[in-house]
Amino acid sequence: MISKIINRFRYKKIQTFTYFIPAPPTRRTGYREKSFDQLTQQLVELGFRILDINTCSINTESSTGLWVIVKTQSTNKTSFN
Image 1: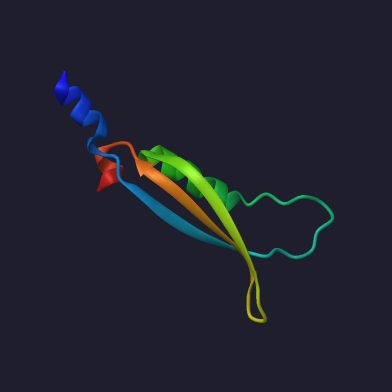
Image 2: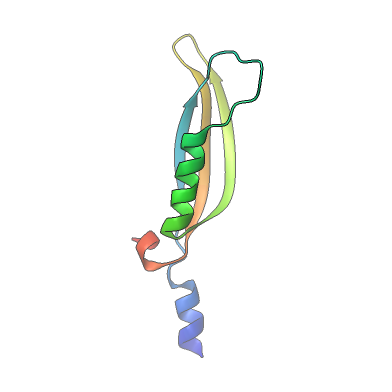
């Protein structure tokens, strides 16, 4: 019984992943960032649970876009390593 409880919490490492999305050209309709969608799907498939997603926009002379910070938790040995 205790070993099951210990194993449940064994691979619970929390870490963050960051991703920068450059500002797209001006459009009349909405825009879906398919690359980001694919990356988050891959994280889930690798055994990460997404705990939180935060964003921070930047607008400088040299760069305009959005930083995305994804807080994850590993759920198995592969994602823990």
